[in-house]
Length: 109
Image (tube, rainbow, N blue to C red; front, side, top):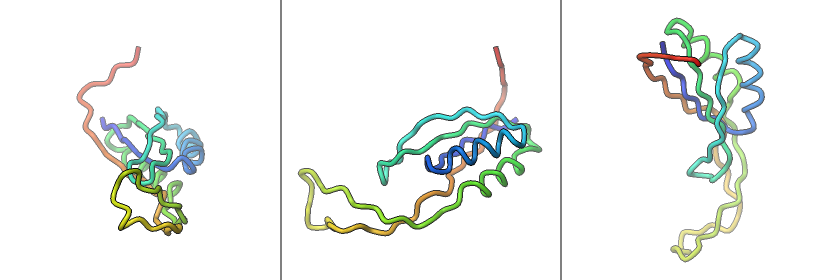
């Protein structure tokens, strides 16, 4: 058995959740915050049998695409203002960061 932990952008959360339910996979959703953009993320925890890992990864790939977005930088508070850029910067957002962990035992009460 494996535990798939997928960190995705909030904008992709509902689409991924619906796709997982449609394919009969159960998941636990946790609210999380990214460190780089300080933006909202959703972390999915999905327990699956070893042979189902690739199916879940395909669902994640299909529903969590990376894209470009303009982001207004956060001004430094007390930091070095020499490298501060006061205009929006284009960054890549979305996609998914996925961890696949072995599960020794699973209990549901």
